[in-house]
Image (cartoon, rainbow, N blue to C red; front, top):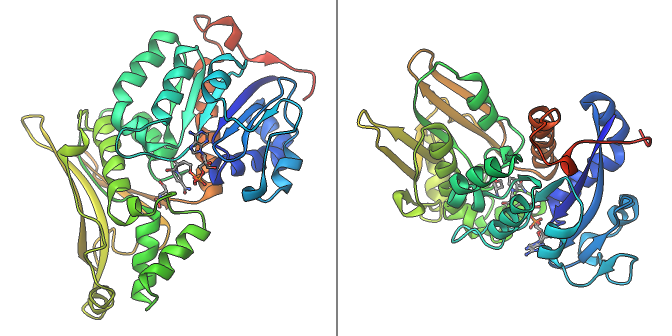
Length: 362
Ligand SMILES: NC(=O)C1=CN([C@@H]2O[C@H](COP(=O)(O)OP(=O)(O)OC[C@H]3O[C@@H](n4cnc5c(N)ncnc54)[C@H](O)[C@@H]3O)[C@@H](O)[C@H]2O)C=CC1
Ligand SMILES: N[C@@H](CC=O)C(=O)O
């Protein structure tokens, strides 16, 4: 059985959850997926960096409270994240990028992804910045280097929206997408309906691992703006920039307005949409809408999200599932690694260093 060595960039909620999956279910996953996984490097802004090309023992790291973890003083450890050196020089097969999403310019995650691809390493990421702001260029770079660039978790966390559209909608013309694309704001709207204060509802979403490091991105719609760009660019063939997508979040709604709507049979939802016109142009926007109860997106509640695809042959196809959550998003990374395995394991053109290694450990 082969094995992939991973470098985890960012060791917050999502990458820790991936490490937990590997640590707890590694043998079962290897048997089921047909390959084993090992972590050879971890970098984090707060914890520093840790490298062991024989494989890092994850259990003691996962036993530590996230805020108390420090790699300084451990063998192969440093207080400095050393991102560029780790990404370029440590012999990992796959770089797993899960640092903060920066909606303005995608950095430093954009550089992390670029360094990895330039070094001939596969990349999977849940970070929306690089995908929304530079997805086309990064996909071109990955193709030039013969490596994979996968980002299923950038939209609807582990719910397989992008791969389903790419693989299952062949022969269909998709004319538009409309969705609830942010777990935090959807959770917060539900809690406002129940009479919880805005700040308390946001704090709950942070505690549950749904919110961005700066939850302004969730509440003001910037996170949905990036996801609409990803959907439009990946599925509708658009090339949208951020300024092309009108964006209004939920902060303009008063808690009274949200509660009052329920008594009128309406539910406020933050809706992102993109529509392709006959001339090929794509309009996209993010805006709160008071949806009637019979609308397919009105019943999507809490951190669950949903995307409706408008198609020529099937009419509307709606996919719904978790939109946020640490483990749910870690699953997206696992699905990305599986996609890389399926596409590249037998690829003779891939650099030999990237060929799946034989291992006697599994
Ligand atoms: N949590 C969720 O439900 C989902 C998260 N995402 C995205 O996945 C990414 C990770 O999310 P979480 O783990 O929840 O965030 P988090 O805030 O818990 O963790 C991010 C980690 O990255 C580290 N970091 C930040 N900048 C760094 C740098 N320059 N070098 C090294 N480490 C750095 C931080 O110290 C932190 O530990 C974000 O981009 C987020 O938008 C995507 C889908 C769902
Ligand atoms: N903060 C985001 C996380 C997933 O992208 C959300 O709440 O949806």
